[in-house]
Image 1: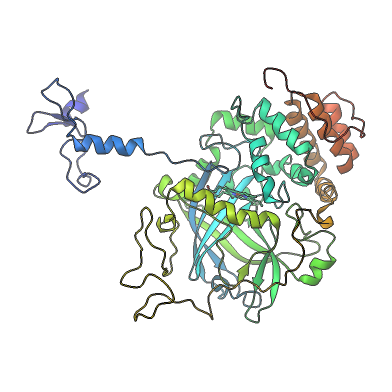
Image 2 (image 1 turned 180 degrees about the horizontal axis):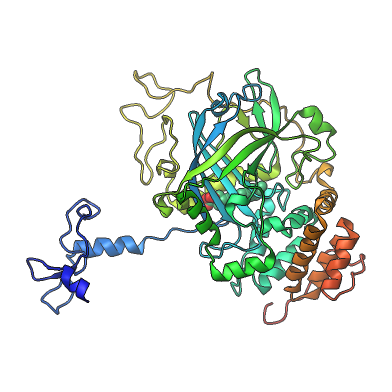
Length: 527
Ligand code: HEM
């Protein structure tokens, strides 16, 4: 009370302002008009009604009313940091991409880590995949490497993405996030989707409960292309390796940490960077050619498969250092828009059906989330190289073409930007032929071998953790036939794992002859 009274100032009209400190800049309206009073609304008389003409009040409340934008449909909870990428060597043998040409050169970056399923206010330490998305602000435009901390994905085709996300997020009728019914829906979907088994082994492993963002690996997942000056294309898989090593917590620790500090991961990153203990990752490439791809046991376009490092070792080509937190979470971490479609000359896509679907989805969702086709002008998304084109108008446009010309070709001089035949982005001229079809190729058919390889590559204690995680997760399923259907997959991965999980659940391993798609009647209340 004493402090408040000491700092109270009385304005010319007799109004009282509580201002403990007046050293900041002068407050203004959104239009720059100086504010005389930010604490009292304009009233008719000391105890009278509020006046509509109080534009300061109306502007302040109007802006507050519109503060929220839709959260991301997936990866809603995330935390970002600025940094740079530094090359160890020139990669001109592999690619013309400008950012990879010169040893020692640094490129500015922004990285956002995330969980996938929880909403924006959900806790950090859940069992989930972690997103690891990095925007490289290169001289040839922005390149986004939009990866996860697991090198494979649940599904082979983007058309299934809405289904797996719906099944994993809260059930539509009760809106429980990651609780009983969500478990039923998730595991119902998984049990009907054998291609998810490899990723399930990873998500049930300790990787899905990392100690912090500083301790996760990152993967571009898909095979991409690098194309060099001779036009030679090679396939590339991108890997981030944390300098601090891969570290996870135990499930019991995760539960406790989540209860004590649901912001544990973001606080850890904040503290480290604020203390000058900058986290680092090395970028590793797996590079291979068509001959390897043709001889490889799996399809290199199948995102549920890895390429073993025994077969294609990593070439470590540079490092990522995160050294600055955003000044404003919303401006940067919330408004950053990553998109797999953002690539630069010298890089290219492959025909991985998940990647091709992603290329459509991110831009589409970002128009809704950020509200304007001009979201590339928000500073965190804006390229740090010149941008010239004839895109015009739209909400929040600031870069519309200047002068007469707003179309191309035109014969005005100066007539505005022109395409660059030499250095502009060109798609790799891959030969394509075939019939239009919806069938999956036979080369995508083996769903269990790499699940088994991953499980067997784990130490005994890590294998125990996978079994324990499955027991915990499956024990939350209410409909036993869903549990049984999940259990039918496990012996194909590993008989011991299957037996351990069944025993942990107090169940017998089901007869493998259980039909894979046996409809389950909903109780009348849910039907
Ligand atoms: C967001 C990774 C598959 C649609 C994200 C983010 C990451 C990510 C890291 C968060 C980006 C950020 O921090 O803002 C991946 C990986 C995938 C995958 C590694 C598979 C390999 C898919 C697929 C689709 C999809 C198949 C749809 C067909 C989205 C959407 C967002 C998103 C709509 C929200 C984007 C936004 O609102 O800005 N994904 N994703 N993802 N992903 Fe994916």
